[in-house]
Structure formats: C-alpha cells, structure tokens
Length: 596
Image (cartoon, rainbow, N blue to C red; front, side, top):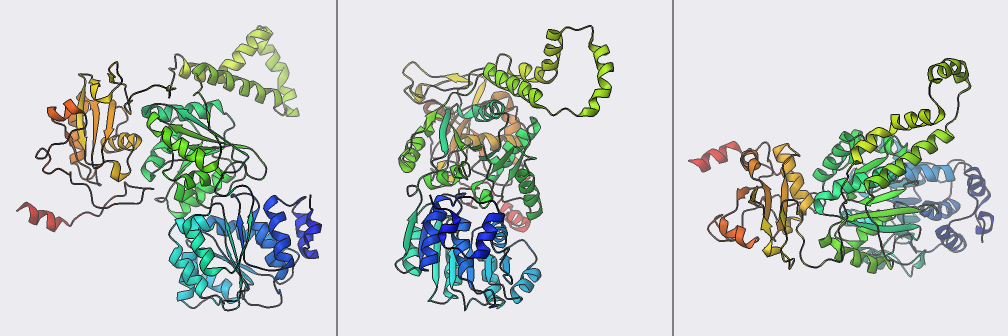
C-alpha cells in the first residue's frame, strides 16, 4: 500500500500530514492525490461522506497554489455552514507549514462585515456556501477571475437543497480555463448535468460501488406496529447503553416531539431542525460533538453538514421516500474505517421500502427483534457492572474506607453486591416488569391497521371486515397521502393540537386527500373543541365525526357530507421535510367581511 511520501506531495505538506498523525492514505486519497499531483485535470470523486475527501482534494490544491500571489486561486463550494467550517479548519491544518496561505470561510449566519474584511485580504482559498457567496458577488466584494481550481464538495446534497441556480451563477464568474473537481456520495441526474456542463473529459475515481452505502455499516430493521415506534426506539436505546446516534424523522414537528419525549423520559437527547435559531443550532451541535448528548433527533435538511466521526448508530424513526436519502443517512456512521449500524423502525406497510433500498445499495438488511424487557435489563446490568469493574479509584478515598467498612460490616459479600446493583438498577426492573412484545410478524397475510389496540381483524384478515370497539369513534381528517402524512404524523398532530398524549388512538386509514382515525369516544368533544381553536390549530386542519355510512366501509367518502367530493385542505403546501409549517392567516378584516 502507498504511503503519503509516495504520493508526490511537497515537503511542507508532508510535514503537516506527519504532524496530524496520518499514517497511510485512505482509498479515495490514494486514488485522487497522485492523479492531481502528476497532471492537474477535471475529476469526479465518488465516495461516501467521512472517507477522507477533504484531504483528497485539499492536499493537491495546496500543492499547486502560489502562496506569494494574494489572489483567490481555489474555490470550494459546500452545502452547509458546518461543512464549510470543517473544510476550512482542515485546509488550515494542511497548510500549517506553508507561509502566507490565507483561507476565508464564507457562509450565512455570521457577520458579513467580518467576511468582507477577510475577502479584502486576498485569500488564496475561499470555502463557501452558495447563498452567501452569491451575496458577496452581488455586492462586488469577491474576485473569482483568477480561480484555477473549483471544487464542488457534497455536490448531490448541495443540489438537493436547491442550490442549482446559485452554483451556476458562481461558476459563470470563474474562468473557463480551470480545473473542476466534483465530489459526491451519489450521482443523481442533477450532478450528471453539472459534470456535462462544466467539466471536460473528467477523470472519474470511484471508491466503492456507485450510489451504495459504506461497507462498514450494518443495515437492520425492526418491524413494529406504528403506535409502538417510540416504545421500540426507547428499547433500542436502552439495549445499547453506549449509543451515540442520530435519529432521523420526517418533519420538524415530529422531530421536536420525539426529542421532547426522550428528554422527559430521562435520555440525553435534543432536537435539530429548521425552526431553531442559529445560536440554538450551534449550541445543540456543540453539545452533540462533545458527546454531552447521546442522541440527536434531526430532519435530513438540518443534519446536512454535521460531521461526527464516532457515531455508533443511525436510526431511521421514519424511512425516507428516496433511497438516495437513506444512503446519505447511513453514511454518517461507519466512517474512517470504523463500523456502525443503521437501524430502521418500520411497520408492515413499509416493508416494500426495505426491498427498494436493498436493491439500490446491493446489500440485504437483517431483521432484528425488538429486545424484550428481560434482555434490556440484562444488558443494562452488565453495563453497570462493567463500569464498576473498570472505574478509576481516587487514592483520596482511602481515608474514608474505615468508616465505610464499619458502616457495612453487618452485611456479607452477597448482600453488598445485591444492594449495590439495586441502587442503580431498580428503575429498569420496575419499568420493564411485564413489558409486552413489540415485534410484528411480517410473514402474516392480510391488511394490518396502523394501530390495532382498539379492535380486531376478522379471520380472513381483510381490513374492511375490521370490527371497531364501541369505545372508539371514527373521525375524518382533512389531510391525506398527498400531504405526505403517515400514522405517526396524524398521532402527533392530535397530541399537539389537544396538548395531550393520553388520548387513545386506534385504527388509521390514510387516503389520497383525507384520512380516517378511530379515537377514544370520551375524547371526541375535547378533540373537536381543540381543532376549532385557531390558536391551537394554526394549520387549519379540519376534523369531524365520520358518518355511519363511512364507518361501514372504513374508507368511503360521500359528496355532500363535507361539501364536495374533495375536502378542502390548507393551501400552504410544504416540501416533504416539513408539511406542518404554520400557514399565513387571512387578515381579520377579510374574515369579518366574509361573515357578513
């Protein structure tokens, strides 16, 4: 295997590599660096996040730069502020022994005056997010006329976040004669178009198979009822006492709800989503990086650019609709030659997604059983004993031992051990006593409701034969499949609007434009009153008691009951990452006028 001395790097760069403790180049570095050192060219690097791509392009770019020329010679575009800062830090560490090199990080959410001042000093390298750099171009504060290297890092994520126009505008401000480097984990059509438009006969370096996850990640799924998703998440966390994970949810509302529930249940967790201020976001990410937080609950958009190398798990609380998104999620663990686990918590209706992802990544998922209460308690007990066995003993405790021995002399060895274990362990035994099995048999036939707490299927297993318990009432909701909702979102919506997590919810049927949900009959009045309150229900989602005729069919919808064959839905349609953003309200004047 090659070492860094054999890659052709300059002496200052080899000094930096040695100072950083790098021993052997990672596969993407061994593929890319010699190519760019020997003959600078356009290049496409396909490799997963966390495989050493920054050094793969950063070291050869620094090798070719003229440190005496106070002009921007290299431009690195990346999708997020966090990735921008990380790349800037890495490049500065690589350039530690090259006098005169300046690197400017240009990103949103920071003082624009400070960044303008950095640009005026003539940095040889600019690392930037597309939005803020375009702002600098409009203000005429940046000169890209002498750029010799243009690097697009995490190109697929950048385009997925809607930066296509910004990237086009920026690249048009650079010279035609330059070397363009594109690094991506996947190669969707949008990235292919950039390759065709801005690159000339690029060399393509692929580390691993195209559009597949990292080989160091184990993929498993747990099959549960939709109502048991959160309970399964808690058991997974308890069964892995040293878990350090990102938990991915679909929407901001669900993300915050799951994080709040974990915090309330005593876990070191917090939420990361688009509604957080930049200061709150930075605080959460800082606590997660230094491992004050064990679990970070996040949306896909919010987690982009979050670079953490030691994740033990990635957990899909909801599977994404796009297999490419799953690849990005799973690539956040198993980095830098470490192993990781990507867990998906699914219900029976989602099993087809597992098959789609398996086909995409070329690997099979393992099906795991949600641990029983006994298994969780056993794992926690062993962890507790292991911590005791390896704890560091402070010498100062010696002075207290005579008093402790006198205090405990009436107990024998077995009694001391039992009491020591019970002191820390009783809460787990109490919580998991008589814990039920959360697993679902995915080999069973017939349609299974999202939540079968309150009814039973007929012998033939058909959904329309489902017998609803008398204690439940069927209700109509004005959101459906086209609103990108799943049972967890509907349950979360009812919990949020009513400000209660105690309402019993049964079967959920989701149609294209609307849904039906069985709720505790005793709570119907409370639900109707809560949804009628525009402050509690700012999105304007309607809920009504379904007619007896609709109850018979389970999914019928009759013109006239709700005014039309297609229920009115709120108009503020959102991207699938967050369908529940609060819509703009009409002015009070227009409401008064309408009421006249």
